[in-house]
Image (cartoon, rainbow, N blue to C red):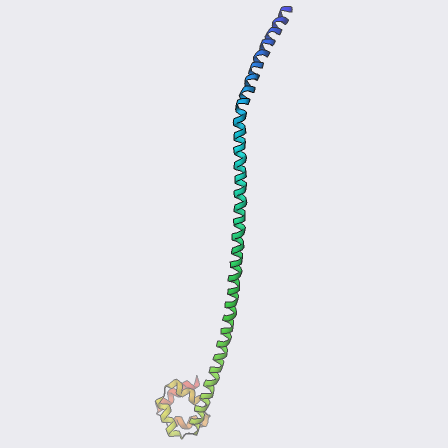
Length: 169
């Protein structure tokens, strides 16, 4: 039994020596690689700092571009509002001009109607016969029915018929 114990102790010490040699080798390898690892760690740190600086610069550039875009958007919105206001003003002026034009045409038509009302039937019929049917009907529509009847009776039957149809519409 003693021999077994001694043998066991001998093997254990031999194994411990071998493990100690391996441990010593690992420590030596780590020491050799330590400088490489430090250089690599330093390089990674530099890259991390460069990436961080790039990210900050990119964010700043993005903020500046967004600010410029917002300014330009505000300018465009302002101009669009001005255009809409001018467009509305133009529409109002156009409506007012059309109203004035209708009023002028009405005044002219009244004067023409007064002129035809004062004319004798035969000359009025001759003048209206030479006019375009639409214009003649327009003039006749502004006259008193009695005057229209007298003028139409002095016209060619076909022309009087055409004008009467236009007056009915």
